[in-house]
Image (tube, rainbow, N blue to C red):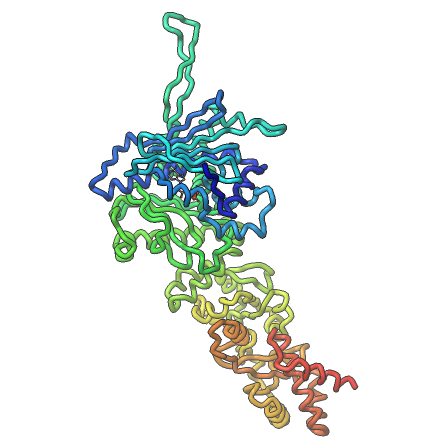
Length: 624
Ligand SMILES: Nc1ncnc2c1ncn2[C@@H]1O[C@H](COP(=O)(O)OP(=O)(O)OP(=O)(O)O)[C@@H](O)[C@H]1O
């Protein structure tokens, strides 16, 4: 018989499983039961949507049988089974290759990380077994097949005998090693506990022959043992259970079993609605960002069930983009089983559910922000960008919903603050909500433009994400207070508007000369009203700010949009005296100084200078 090779990635995963020192080996049973339940689900779904098939719920179950003498543990199901081709495709290749490829760079060699972070499914059997045999017969098929593997060297497939459709997975449990005991996976009480812990809500009965004791017939003190088939799980789906009966661990186990995320959820939301629309939902706000979250690979959506039957894995219509990080499921009796994606989009019920869910997520986030600030900030580190993106997208349609959930770093508080917090402590004379944009908090801290606003004692919000300024432009104002960049032309300060006409006309020619020297690079050169200790800065007139220019330039379809730059000179700085002297005595020197100041201002802003060699030559000219 020919031994076939595993696909390279499967082999690696398998080796990790075999050598695993993962502490939670017990999850293999959860994985195998979950696969069995999925297989019955598939059959159930088929029967419900195909008139030729009938589904008698009672004859569908999962059975767990331990045989201590032969050291085997068998998990059988009466599900849809697998064809020879299915066996090749499902058990020889891993579907989640993307996650494995990602983990390659990060994982610990023993596979600890990968097991903890991703559902490893079928292969987890190799954590406890040194040989795995799968006997399966697909629905509508005449032949059954046996798949067998003792590990990474490969697997065999051959025809075999099996009466009914379904799958039987036989694990040859490893011998105990020095520090590892595997016997527990053959113990009734242990298996029962594992099933209860992870698979209690599985909708099909998980049966097991359990040893019970009874009084011997005719005796009053002698007991005898006997075996009795029992259903171990309660079979009530967790989402149909009363919230009061459930513990946080129940939700965490459900999250892990469903592979919603590789972290522990930050928060769960259990919804039961029984009114014009009826549905149950369990939603999770993850703690950590999925590795592909901000990529096009990420698929948002909730699992959609109709009366307990899974009809769609990722129903994207249930979640708006700004809450795309939410994981979970919705079950409604009011949806048709035969529903297609296209029909779903227009389904009134589904739209109502989606709207309802959105409201619920918002209010949960608000209460998290109010009552568990630290947790919210943790959440915000991962998904804040998505919320800000939500403010900006769809022409600002969702800005009202989201404006109280977004936060920015505050110059005064040195931490994230909400817009409401900012506005509520604004001094009476402060007209605007001030913000400054830059690459990082450290860089913004040093921006010359922030000086005068900070000196007035006003708080400044730091915008460090690409999306920040775009979102704020969409918001325009919060509680009637407009947003104002510290770099904008008019900061609305009284003294700013008081200028000395004599001084202005005196400097007019100098600035005109400097502007011409810089030709089209700047729109204007003027005396700064915001600089205190720094000699120079660049400000932007008009709609496009310097930060926005940087972002737009970095985009692949860059339209060459540029900010209208204004070079601002601090007339109280000593450098200004040098400029005046040069203007009176040495125009060539003024030209040199102008170029230097302009390039300095660009560098402070984090912009690139067009000719670095010329810039360094200019510095040398000043030195010699
Ligand atoms: N008991 C079973 N009956 C029928 N098919 C099965 C059974 N067990 C596994 N399979 C098939 O093998 C595939 C691979 O299983 P595996 O557990 O590795 O990943 P998965 O279940 O697809 O993913 P996940 O574990 O993340 O849900 C399944 O998708 C299914 O098609």
